[in-house]
Length: 342
Image 1 (cartoon, rainbow, N blue to C red):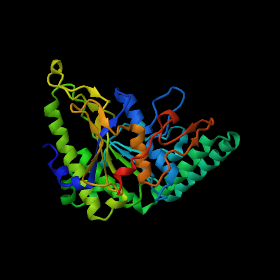
Image 2: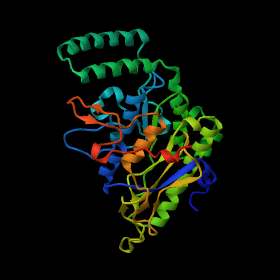
Image 3: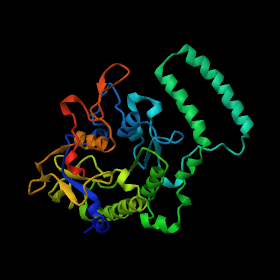
Image 4: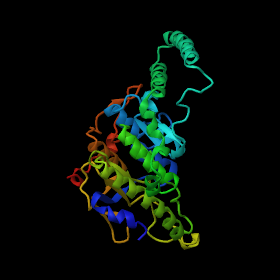
């Protein structure tokens, strides 16, 4: 009853009711969700957006391939892929892409002169230190100057949208982030994440979930309808995922709260050939464990890859020569849920 607008677009969605994780703490769970690996002290694994850009390249060569909105900046990390595949973390959808325009106090001639000086210094440094990291940062700065001149930069300016459209998404950070995501899809950004926190309901679960669900309901349903109206939904995968679920029982000593429950929870996929109006998997009658078709985080991410035409089990080596895959380590290797596609 808390998601009435999402109910109206259920024919576009598949609810995966048997998602399961082995991580029950926020930081570790978020890391696994975004990277298909558990955290290690010896390496930082690439976020899923970086994997997608690495496999598919950027569609729009003057814009970032990977953007996060309102998320922890760590979730935009390219890890050992380096700066070339780094995501761009935006704190607020209303601020546009900061520091992407030449200041009015600097003329174009002066700006180009400064770039030439920096270029000369960088060439000496790069000649002395022949490191892939140095080269990737050099490439990143070149792309940043191209971005400043791109006409598509205006896609980050949601103020250009009619007030009626902005209202449909909800006047909050998540809803406006979903609107920004639609604008970025239109100009060819490969991967956009929009975060909605506030679900950690150890206390007062029922009040908090109703309030958070209202925000999710408006923003997500507006995004699905808008993409569909513009003919973009069939080529765009939209997902809802969290690092874990909540206990199916109420923790009375926490004043009607629910604690962390990674063993079984639900996720959603829509668009991009997903068979809508369906569910996949199920839980036991109390919602504690998957009853059939358990879906790991690695399976979930492998399914994202499959929808995008990516072989998520393809090995890419780190600079030290270690093998890694978008679908996770060999012992936990994810398998795409092909049955949920048309």
